[in-house]
Image 1 (cartoon, rainbow, N blue to C red):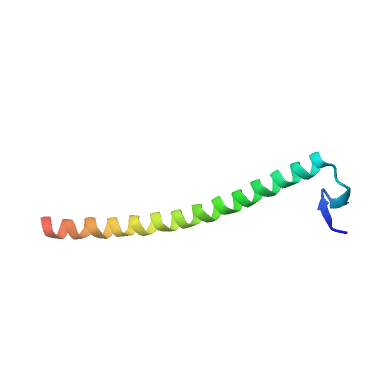
Image 2 (image 1 turned 180 degrees about the vertical axis):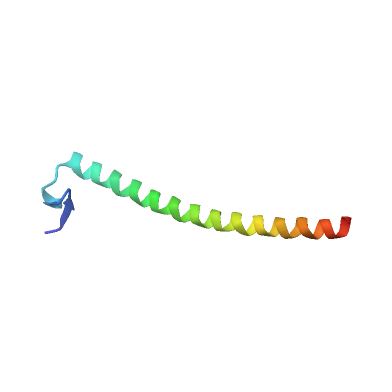
Amino acid sequence: MTTIKIDEKEYDLDQLSEEAKAQLASLQFVDAELQRLNAQSAVLQTARMAYSKALTNALGSDLVFNS
């Protein structure tokens, strides 16, 4: 017997209706996508900071050469 806890109540997965199982699968998919997108966002934010720092350094170098 496999159970799942929803709103502090446990449910036997085998006893859920097909509609409830479909809604649960959709919810699990959305949760997984949100986790994936949050991880991707963290990677992109890190890359953005690195590019911003590199740009600042490049602009500083340009100012030295243009002086």
